[in-house]
Image (cartoon, rainbow, N blue to C red; front, side, top):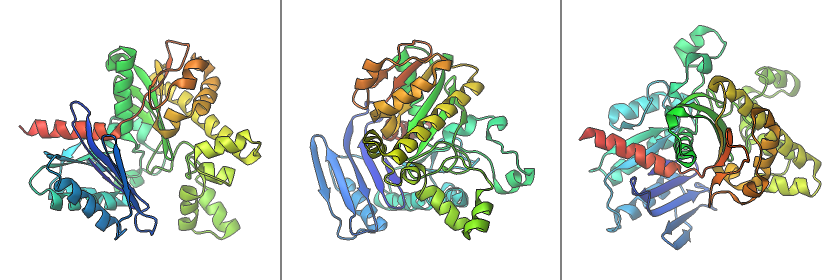
Length: 390
């Protein structure tokens, strides 16, 4: 599995059936002197500073290390691709036509798709004799109906320019929805779930009978919930207002909404929820407001997603914040009593990435912590595409 971003590369070699991970790693802060590559193989971990920190060089070195390891027989490579537009509604085998189509929707994810394509090309050069598969973040949300994905804007914007809601974090939402059904001991076809992927990027999705029917992210990953450095929903008139009042152009406002807003913008200190909570507990008023706004907006979105579901059987927390922050989970559940959710404080205090499980006294709806595994989901979807070829 390969996930190439503009400044990071995640990789893993794993068995899609058993889920056993042979090796996994992440290269971060690429293109800077602080670049590093961390690798884990079993209980052994290693961190190195690459001599050439450029994304291209580091990706090539990572792939070479995997290729030259005789203990890692590679039968296929799954690639995370952020945006598939309307064309790609499921994982697909990569050929030149596929790559051209991914490039063609690059304007919808200019920070991500070009890096994804570069990663595919590097992996094809390193592993020319195995099939490569693209797994799209947006694909899980392709089942949303028009009432959920269309904006109330001129029709030509949609027909000509693809202006609509697409949704993201699809591999995570798909994985945890399936896993939640297993934990509840009920068929996915019988369940109405809201899955909340909460990390530096955050989104929530309404999942009915195993398929997505609505989500919080939209045309871009900026829409929706408050995030680490992203604002989430703002008034569309904000750009014109700041152009007139502050002399900021579209690029400057968009950059600030993506990189200087969210928890960071509200707290003035950090985009990390752990730091924000610690500051709030120490009496920092700005951090306390950041935490309150994050929780309020999240709870409001979850309640709204119960509308397309016409009810709720379970709320599922996942992602770095969702799996690790009992404080956030507790505050959200306290705001959602109207849906019948009742926190089990003792369970909430212990459940997280290591264990997962139910954190509510209520059984229907239930609240669960389900550790996500996007790498395994990508491997499974890759395996399904490869099996369909035979």
